[in-house]
Length: 491
Image (cartoon, rainbow, N blue to C red; front, side, top):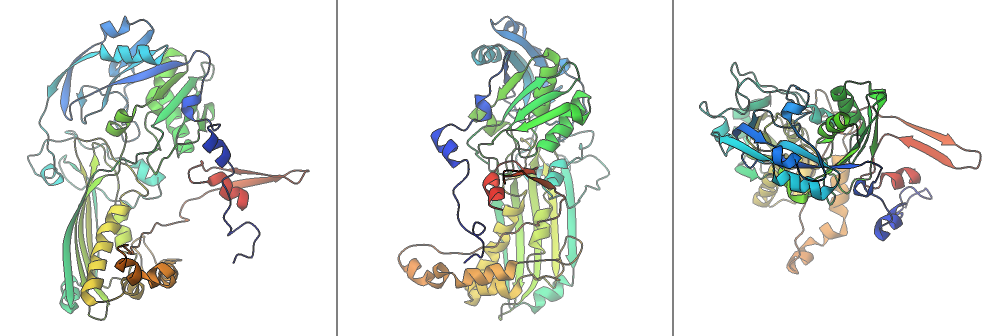
């Protein structure tokens, strides 16, 4: 029982009524004078050279204001930050934007898209990560990878890792963690389990597609950006960079996102900002569901080989893993998956190697932590298998080997705080776990798995104003994703 009146007690969402009655406004509801609508022409090919783009008929459609190709926009060096600017010269994933049609209404923009004709010269490609790493594989970036993984840093998940290849390759980055004596660790084990796991690309499937409205400011050269984003400060920084103005001249208003799950950081804001600035008109861009599936940033596919050594008494002796992540056409960092696999439990002997592999697919991002669910899926599966083979309680096996404060981690030092043991103890005492045999006899599955994420590693700030009438005004830098206004109101 909580000692507090509000903290620790369930409370209804402060904005729940507005959401269930339809009063809550989302970005798609935003209207303003002179608003234009933008639609995309996208590539049907995963790898092709662009021979020509004919936009003459599209420009004649009633209501079409402009048709943009890469030649109409500033030339910027490709990077993960501006990965969804219009393709220049070649396309490297199916669904990549090739042209943008802007019109006075959405229907005219759609009609214009149908009348943009693009000639492609399809190029060789590969379909698997193993093929991507072969010496004769077609290169996603023949002149070298852009080598920028800012989104991992934005998630607090950048743990380093780089490609040391002397020549360009499809290897976006890699890292290796090792300590102890692997041969001795597995020799000491009474049970060794080695398994391979494969996960597919998974789209976050938020209810509201990616959406943005940009209104330019011709006086300052900046803009106001309404966007369904998790990272308004990141968006402000990058929009200012591409518009060539100070960050203070860009105002980002994060609208209530209809779901995000790690996917809504920075996508089409830069393209729409440049187009709006060129037209000096506000521009709205909302993806269709099919476009969102094709041309955003889902969770990456992975291939993992995991080998676990354990004694008959349940003591872990060694962990070995080889991890591949398909980052799509831009490099990304998923090394935190290996870091957490090697830090959640006590491993006297450890050898982990992860590689980020680029491919001719849409670029990947986070889905509730970049790469971590995939790694935990593999690790927790072999731990469960070990528990069954040893006839041990799965929670007891995890608790016996759980890292605790002061134990080493792969983050570069010991865990300053680690609550895994307390969580497992609470789970073991839960009535569902205590009565799992009865539930399983009724055909109800009961299982356990561990997942984790480092917390408190990034700076943050908040301010509060106490008014004369007793009300409190709290300023925070977080967007509303999972009941943020309600949580801070409770606090």
